[in-house]
Image 1 (cartoon, rainbow, N blue to C red):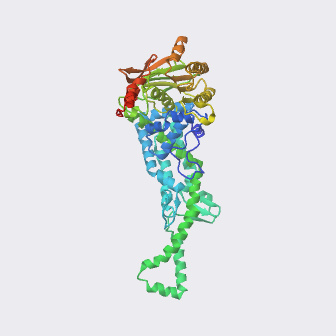
Image 2: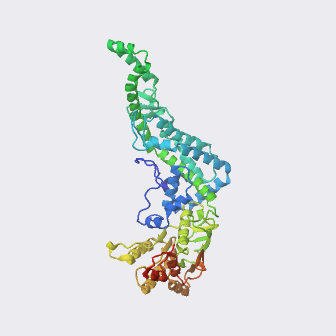
Image 3: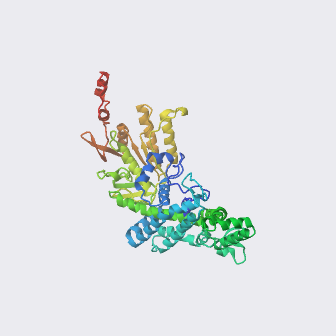
Length: 540
């Protein structure tokens, strides 16, 4: 399992990086590689989903969670192992306390570690331009930063041994650091030799080297400096007279030491020892793996805290292995909107009953929120997380697509219809029977008759592919035709007294409530007539 985890993602700590791992790097590109592409990432609001789910306590934990959402897993075995790890933490209080202690202490020291790896140490007299420019020669950053690594390994070794393979592998990623060269250098002693920084074992008995001590106070060096200063004074009578005349002012005797000794020793330690050592830490695969292991532990604990804070029923979905995509949820709620709303309505759907679902209903009834909920639930399931439903069963989707109407690009010469059709074609070609495809309207920007025909051609194609397809549409005639053919399920958002209940029920909505929306915003037929008559009052 440890090797699998190492192969799934590049480590967040990169050798060539000039700054600590970013919590939110650039979103996925516009290509269709991976489980989720850039357009879907934006459409289902993954950044807001991250904010809702994120309960990690460390920077690396937050970066790990965002990476998981950005690159969800498509391996059933790893997802099941991750779920088992979460379940074990929940069931074992001693294990949870050990992990929380580890992560909490690491969170307190994490900033020190990044300051060591990426800081610029400016010496005695300096003015900081940014957070990673630090006063002094780096001794404090070195002591605190290496303490982060040493304590991380020690605390990981004190955690009760887990039974789940995922959790054991993550802890092993941390404890393996103890056998690395970088750990030996951090533990010390480290030596500066002609060939660079050496551990005690690398130095041997007969290699000429200087032992690095992270302090300006060097007993041997200071003694030699004072002897040299005494000899200089002894052989220069004028300087002797000056020193004798101010003997009562001891601080003046220290002035030449400060002006010569501190910059020489501090500069040598910084440039000759601390910078090379921190380069060894930053480029060490074992350090990179250990930091990722910390992030993965924090992510697991954060997902548990997400369950505890959500305020509605959640569950670990039952993952099934099937040739075609399936998703069945009971009382599913939007993970973003429901978190701050105890009255948020849950809904049920079973996409295993049919490969096609058509969602109709007036504007502002909750169609889009419901379909985003399904996509976000599938995504959460594929990072090993709890999902916002009382019950859930799903297959692992190889692709999650969410298509929304796009602003036409005049330069492409195709208008809105061509732009959207090009996106739909790309999704169709990339989808497989194991994909989840959600589309918000089809064939906009053409005549009603053409819209019906082209939409049916597209939906028939997806249905034959065998993936799960959901379409949000106002076109009840399109839904009627599929019901007549006995294909797909028809669902509508419920309204009572012209007000949405936000429930998704069986049936086809044949009204748009457009006049209700126009009245609400003050632009109905009556409002327009009033404006034309000269009454400029607007509704609140």
